[in-house]
Image (cartoon, rainbow, N blue to C red):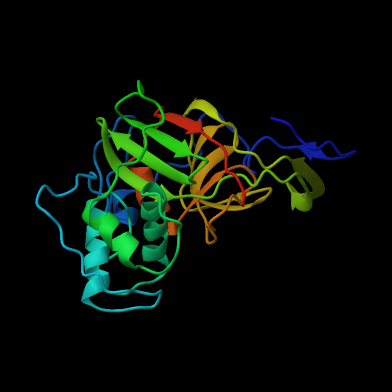
Length: 274
């Protein structure tokens, strides 16, 4: 991975974690997340992340224009529909907040709609007749994760079926140098902030907030050296990380119970800024 070279700086190839050969801490327990701890190929999962199998019967959307902050039955319908399709909008509580918005963005990107917080005609029509995510690896293992850097989404398959689809934010691609206190002394770290494409496998993970030399990672699951899937408080509509794949906090709560060790991770595409 190309890196910015600076005298006296440590060159990074990830997003701030030190890779090790075994997990320093176990995945989140069922008592913590409400999920079953995953293993490679695990098909166990919480009710919040059902297999994305659209209903066979015709679906009629409410068609009421919704804006962020809206409340009511139309929002609850939206949340239930997104959950049924494999997205994670949070509880079907009829409140359109940030968690539901991230699921809306993921759905819109899969369906070729410019991401927006407003739910209008185009999104309602797509919810009635949704598209499935584009398969990036045709001959991939039945259980695998695919990261589409172009659309900034991650799709997790179990047994050949879509289990979970989420909005993500990958490496910004902007070279950086940052000075921080790490292991008791001030150090300078530099890197290219890229999320490399390729074929990888999940390795170790940490539970809860994991401190790295570039910041805090929530429930990280590493798959390429120091590069991991992890929850973040900020997951914008553009690549913004140091190289890791950021995802919404509620998705990071669920994923450790679904995505086990040794699961293939395929990273494809490239984000194009407009």
